[in-house]
Length: 280
Image (tube, rainbow, N blue to C red; front, side):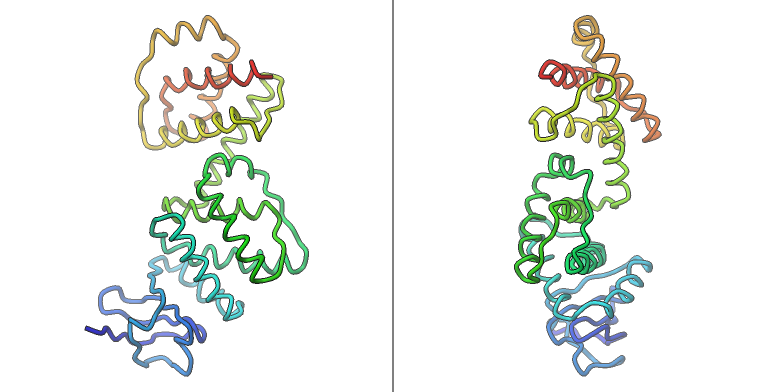
């Protein structure tokens, strides 16, 4: 049975907000969907290529305010990119990415056209933490560069990867960035304490970053690793510098997250640190 909705607002030729019996306001996207339409007109649910909810009032307001400043063909293209991301990730994306990625790409394209480039200080860490999202973001960047005939800085891959990660995990970008900043702080403490410069393209560096990320996630979710008393005695005796530094890192994590961190994390961090120290 065909569902018929009532148009609440025409945002442009391709995007309308309509009233749904169950979900109330929904955003509908489709080629020519809003052409010659006005508030109060009927519209078939099946005519939309994509329909999504924006439950958050701030996000909805941001999306409504953003669209008049975007070329209409770009909205359709960003919709294509979102379908590509969903297909590549094999997961449904959280609806907030429609606002976040539309906003981000619009201004990134504008910056590229003006030859303005932002660097991304967390590029290596993002690649290490979210390898699948990073590869998909590479594909998005390639598609944008080919279609828009522009060149993005490499850091843009990292920014887009974060948006993708946020959309598949339903974590806010604020939390993701907060954890990345904490990891950077921990890495700086490691370099200073061990008097070494970590090679960011090194496999052991990637392992360390992934472990720190998992440790933060475990602390956030209140998960424990389990006791390893015998191993603790060995590591404490054999690698006192790395063992003591691992405890420092745990204390920093606890302070920043305002949550307890399982003490067993010290043992695994000690092993990672000793591997890096031995290599240097």
